[in-house]
Image (cartoon, rainbow, N blue to C red; front, top):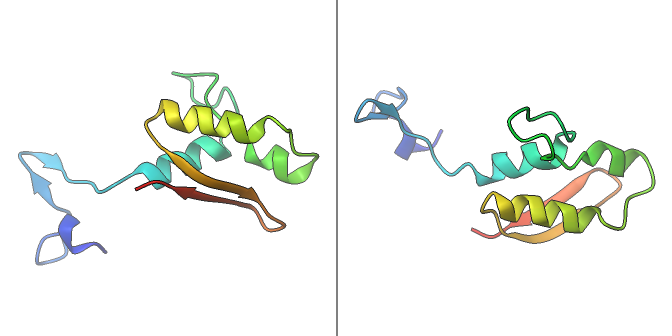
Length: 93
């Protein structure tokens, strides 16, 4: 567990009445890439459906769609590869 997000006793860190969280961009990127369009009810077009790319013929436009959706959320993509075992993503820090 990240020491910056916990107290000396291992409890979650609370500051000014709010739970302190760390960087979430990797988690956000994974959720967007995995999600089906329509899964996020507050933003139906959001979602890149990685499963369809892995289980079928990959769309030639998929990489661009992933980049567009991640950048709309403020996440810069460095590398995106579809491999035999899944999708590999490298993000800008």
